[in-house]
Structures are given as C-alpha cells and as structure tokens.
Length: 381
Image (cartoon, rainbow, N blue to C red; front, top):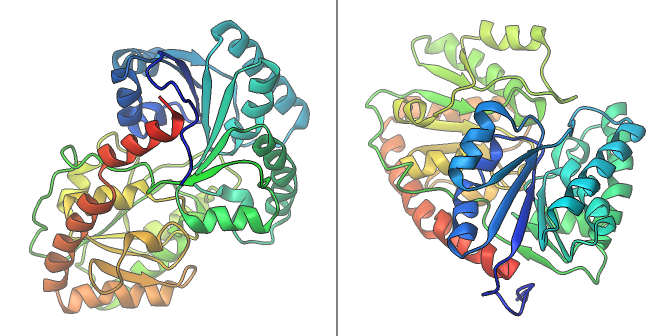
C-alpha cells in the first residue's frame, strides 16, 4: 500500500491544482477541492481561460483562480517552453507546498516548472492516456506519442507520486518504461461520482439511448453513429441522442463526420451545462470509447440508475459487470455495438434491472466521498 506523502497531515498547506480545461476544476475536481478546503488547506486553481464567469465560479468554491496560457492542440516546443516558464513564475509567486496536475500538458509542463520553482511536492494524476497513447498509426499521433513519452518520463522522474485511475494505464506506462521504479504509484477508482447530485431515477418505459462525450474520434463517436444507422433501419422511432461539443484537439471530428452522424438519425444537442435531464430521459447509456482513465459520464449514468453499454477497453471495462449492469463490446466495432443496443430494444425490461445494478455498483465502488477520502490520504493532506 502506498504511504501518504506527508507525515504531518494536520499542518495547513497551500495546494495548486493545475489543469488544461478550466471547467474541470469545478465540474470534475469540485468535490476533491471541497474536501481539501474542509481540512484547512488553501487551494489555487491554474488553468487556461480561467477568467470571467469561470473565475467567479471557482472563487465561490473557495479557490483562488489563476489564468494560464496552456494549449492542448499545439506541439510547438518553443510555445511549450514558454508556457512552462510562465507556470514556473506563477508558482514562485504562489509558493505552494504541493502541485497536483492532471492531463498530459499540465503534467509534462508542470513538473519541470514546479521543480524549478522549488515546490516540495509534485503529484501527477493520470485521468486517461489521451490522444497520443491511444492506438492508431496517424503521423500526428505517432509524433505526439514520441514527444509525450520523452516528456512523461522526465515529469515522472520529478514526481513524488503518480496516481492512476485504472491498472491498465499504469501497466502501459511501465511497459513503455516511462515510470521510474523509484517513483511511487497508486490506484483510485476514477474521480468518483456525487451520489446525491446524480440521484437514482427510474428509467422511462420506452427504450432510448444516450451518449455524452466530446466529439472526438477516440470516444467512439463514429461507431455510435454507425450503430445508430443500423438500429434506425428497423426501429426508426427509437430515440438516439448525442450530447457533446467540439474540443480543440487533433482528434476532433470534422464537420463532414459530424454531418454523417447527424444523418444517421442521431439527435445531436451540443454541449450542456447540466447533463442530469438528459440522463433521466434515457434508458440506456452508451460510451464506445477506445480507452479512458475512468469515464466520468458512465459513473454519472450509473449513479442515476442506467444500464450501460461500453467497450471492453482500459478504464471502461471496470465500470461494467457484463450481463449484470450492462454489456461490454469490442472497441472500434460498430456492429457489436449495434447488437448490444438491439438487445435492449428487443427486451426492454433489461434496462430497468441493469439500471438498478448500476446504481448498486456506483454506491459500492465509485462514491465520490470514498474516492476523495483516499485521495487526500494519499496526498497527505
């Protein structure tokens, strides 16, 4: 078992959370931040675009917001060096006791910046391997993987702890020899889910399908569209909804690909601030992702009490007991996805029984209070 980082957890600390997507500080890390604040520590949130309404929202949470120029979509090394120096200068002003960074850019640019600023503790939280380390042979992906491997190896050598959200990701980084044997690691069950906020609701009587994801190829959005096209041939009235918007990434769908999904019969709503109404309106949640850390959208759907169809892929497979609270299908396989969805159309009672099982698993394994208790224990806060 990994030992806590600090032998004096009662001493107040100044903690920096470094992110590449500002809304995630509230939407994904909000419960963790509240737990850290409740223990008497001070929290700073560093992310790009952290101004205006977002800044006010983080202030209400109790966080000091700091805007950082951090782009997810550029491989420009000069720009990355400039960003790392900017983070270093900010950290020198803040003088934190700890930096917790998540997603690739904050980790690989934040670790050397924290070391240069003489921050005592840098912790990397791996919430998924991302575009660079998902299987594929495109030139940009291979270049990203090459550069990312070098940068990750350096960042992990500067980290006091690396926290993973599933064992497959840790084993993959070990296989690639990115993790120094001297760097401690730990596993947590994703970011958890607020079981009260995402309260259990009975599914509607008629079958409908929902996917919530950014419009990225690696989320399996194209396969979802193709499965919808096959299902709509025989069951044109079955609602199939996709909630999510575009995102600055080399993996983002083109307008032509988005149009093809819309033409398949999928109702596309764009991104929404509150996904709960969409979850309550569906009977089955679908996420055909190629790889995840632990998919937050699936945990939310499980908490609401929805049957799940997802892939037998790292991060996703942990959320489903196949045949109990949903079905696992091979990634990149639209036909298998269609066949799993079809089972609910032909046997609607499955959605109700599997939804009850989903909620039970969420309570046992993914309660955000349990996850955050473990996180703050690991961080020594």
